[in-house]
Length: 139
Image (tube, rainbow, N blue to C red; front, side, top):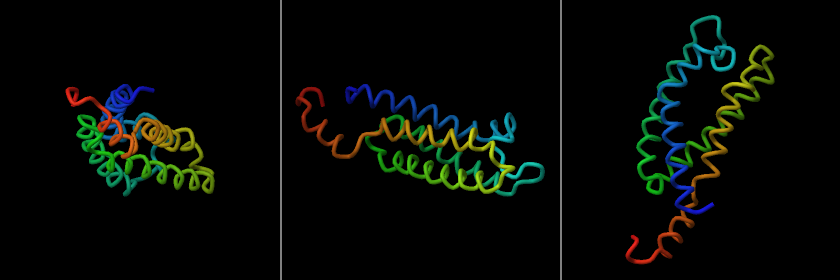
């Protein structure tokens, strides 16, 4: 895939994931609690914390969408933290049988998000090489 096409797609993905992080986490706990709300059936003290963390990440992903090459550390944090979060939740869903639907809900969503971001996000060396090889008049 051409470098600039990859960056353009990355921008769109960052916008979509930023908006989902800002607004979608809470919405999905309402729409499909069994797939997105852990320990449903009572007040979940962790939910406000998770929503706050993801809303904050969403704001920064939207900022990163303007210039992904300048926000690689943030994007890679989103990739790796999503992967770690998904793995921890997957283990918990396997250990606690009443949480298994999460394997098809938030676990799957985080794995997909991490994979797509990871595939589209350039490595720092790739960014440097691309900019070093561009003609002077196109910079």
